[in-house]
Image (cartoon, rainbow, N blue to C red; front, side, top):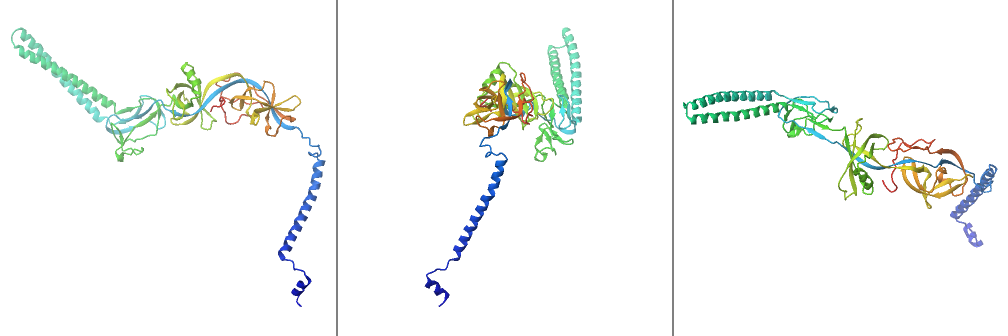
Length: 447
């Protein structure tokens, strides 16, 4: 009898190969679990020996934090907006007579003064026209002088009854006609001289000249230069370009918009004759470019954006503002005296609302809700909830809870200052360096 038959006779069944693999896998998993548990026992004993939470009976050590003393100081309130630099006067200098452009006398990208020579058109044909008009004037003057002498003789002969009255009247008409011709000749001479003066193209205003748009040797017409190689309006298409473009940049204007919720405070002071200090900062709000004043407000609100356009003027003595440049504008609208301030890092927002952690005399912290006002640089005004002299946690709030004992590792006290209207430097706690971004004070709920 075969082995296969013996299995059936004995009532036994041969185990499957897959079942053997599963049993082996479960066996090794159990061995791995036991080894892991045995390995964690010495580590837990080590923590107990080193004074961990298990050895301390669950008592937590003091939490290291940074503290700040609450103080009071004057805080400026700034409104911020994005502005565009505009030139009070942007002039395209065009030729007024036709001719050959002899020279271009200004330096591109440099300041020019009103009346300065910018370019010269060939004046020879205009000089000849002046001479011709002058000669015509002299000829008419001579004819008038002769006619006046004849009229004097005719009038004498008329008194002697030696000439007819009609002849005297005709002579008087001739003299009057020559006087009219003389006036015409004088006007023609003045016009010729004016045309000659226009061959000297001068700057109508003082300002910054742009890049040169035309070169010497080009023909110019009364509508502009023709055939300029430096302009996008190339002469090949018959288009004319200006001789120069001058932008007034000293002073310069900046146009910006404020939301309608803020314009009441600004416009009322502007209409009252108060000069509101205005600052222009670079695009990153890191560098102060210029300081000026608010000069005007528009007469209607933009219905699409709900904002009002305003305009500020800057002396721009350092030429850091250029037309069409985007800048960040700050308008000083108010200064809050004796404002209670804390570092902005000491204020948190959560389920209790806006709160700070106040450090008591026994180094135990208490959560206290506060009401905040404006922010200035790294400081936040506290409207209610704190008093000067109290200590608050300025760093490490995320690991605290009400009643936790703390250990102050660095005490930083806010440096008090007087009114800082117009102060350009940031106000920061002692021992803390101000960040690179100088954030202006803004009213709560405003931009």
